[in-house]
Length: 131
Image (cartoon, rainbow, N blue to C red; front, side, top):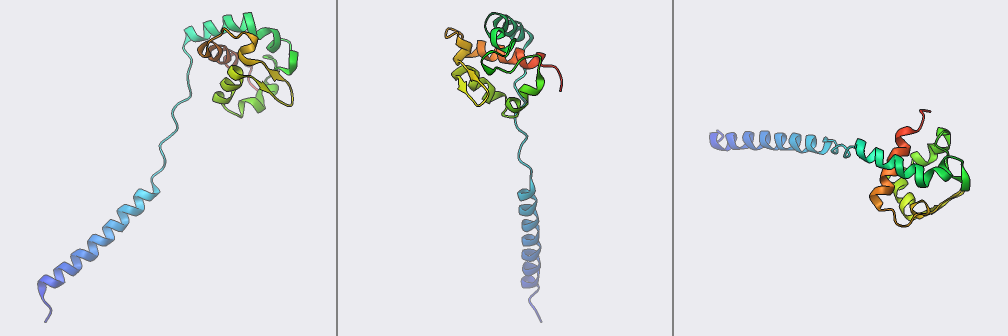
């Protein structure tokens, strides 16, 4: 005859191990947390960005000078938008020379702050016509 305590312990351990495996398997299936929401500019930032765009950016992004993507040509923005906003900000702040043109750092106005450049980029993105 088997020891009832030993039988109880064996069943308990088997059930506990099965439950532990289930918990670990479910934990491994847990999805990664969603990425933080994209930066949503405030209306005041967009107004500031519009002013900067009109004073600095419009010379190229309004005409296509230097290979700049025009604001009224959303197809020219597709490859740039695919890189994400952070890359657009980085190129606008530090400058960029690409296959289609050149972006001077801070639009050629070195006294613009990073936040002012971001505001101008945000403004341009907010007024791009839909594709």
